Image (cartoon, rainbow, N blue to C red; front, side, top):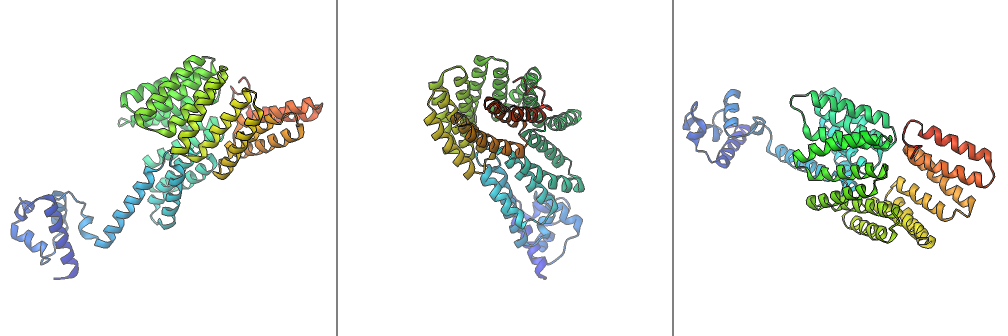
Length: 434
């Protein structure tokens, strides 16, 4: 009896016992009990067809009986590590997911596994609004997926690329990818309706960014219908949030508030504290716009509390910026400066470039009386937004710089800033009107 036959026989016996079958039951109708017994004792080598039949009855792949036990254990452990990393790719745990994925990539050797890990990393970067980083990962994953002929993985790459392009302000490219994907999904008789819903939601977001609020609303309503059919509470949060921003854009602040409250209720169902923090921050913004500064401060304090509990920490900087804005509306410039300084420190510690830029914008408003300091802060913010491809924010900051230059009597600089703002935003049709 060879060692390999002994291991094969032991595996067949273990799988049979786990399946609750006798030797006779396993062999029926083709093999006798004696034949199965000889196999388990390692006395004979089964033909491949025979092994395939037995593996099928035992609910195991044929490779399970052929591979080395130690290799099988390692493969199983690896699969568990990959599953654990994938489970962390959410808003609250994206930073932790990236650390796990980086470690797994260091030891990855199979092209398909590497491609999947790159896509997971891109998703995590997108949750953190790190578009350039996501696109770098996706570029690597796309080449591998194409070479391997992995159609579904290529779809995921395309979808995440659209999300990343939106983050960096490449709205037309984002929309083109999303509409192509939506057509592809709807032509497929085995359509992935969950993906269809996500594509509709993302098209709503891109349309909002482009100032096309009626189109955005139509996409969000279609996504809402899909999410309700699927019973997907987690997706309802994002859709209600999108509808809230659409109503806010057309001046319906009451409708926007109502949708945010629905989104907040959906977070309670899905038990998503990170999403709840986003909703509270949105309610704070709306309350401040309606002149209800005290209510706005209560909402944003709740957002900060939840984000510090549930994460991600990088989002805390965004909510601190909202609080600083509320303090400015209340006329408390000292509190606004204190909170904006904290937001800037938090953003820099968590590598949240956009939040750092937003904090600099708030600080520029605080020290608006000091034109030199305000200009320096706004130019630093503009540099960050330009590097991030954040066209809307860049245009807003450049227009503020133009106003400061005009107030100082520097008409040439004012004109230069205004022209740069136009060039930065001309591709997004609805921005200048907003």
